[in-house]
Image (cartoon, rainbow, N blue to C red; front, side):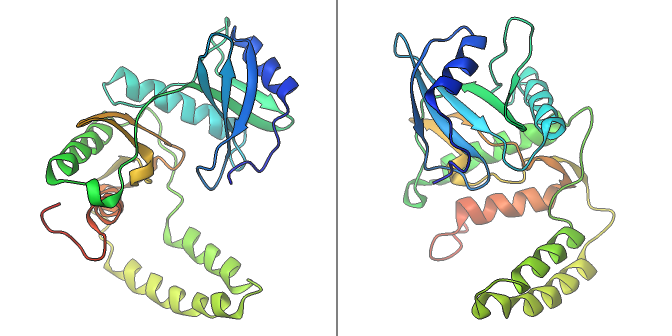
Length: 240
């Protein structure tokens, strides 16, 4: 359940009032693994999606907001947070940034419902992200140095079964690093285009979600993430 930070109704009402909404109820969402996510129901039946950034500070959250605005202006089906009368999109809950997004109706596909036609639509949407670029790009979170640091965390896990994997992962990472080409084309990558970050209405893709991992990476990395997320069930489906 991705609700690490509690959101009392009075605080939700304060956040909503800044945006001109009268919030009547708050419900935690069992979605995501990093941030706290809530659905707000407002007077009149409008629903909103509220995110409390658990890992990113104000600077990182502001960079994501700026990126979303940039992408939407260039035809990428992303979703921008709502703004107050001063044009500000971010609020705070204690020290944590908070953003409120319009609720987007849509469904998430299970693997069995992914068809070649839908896979082609996802690929075209990812290409739009790559072509849109960004005015500024932060380094990705999945560089070899970052992943080696995660290995240290795994090694300290209380489970001996998990901790024993750290050495194997370190060896594998070093082998992969030796194969990387410094000339590989790079640019803005989504970094997290799994099935639960894409909403559909019938055959139409209506929104790409969760650009928190978006950063400068090799485009092949982004394509590999999408291939594993959309084309692999019990085995890799080459038609997808």
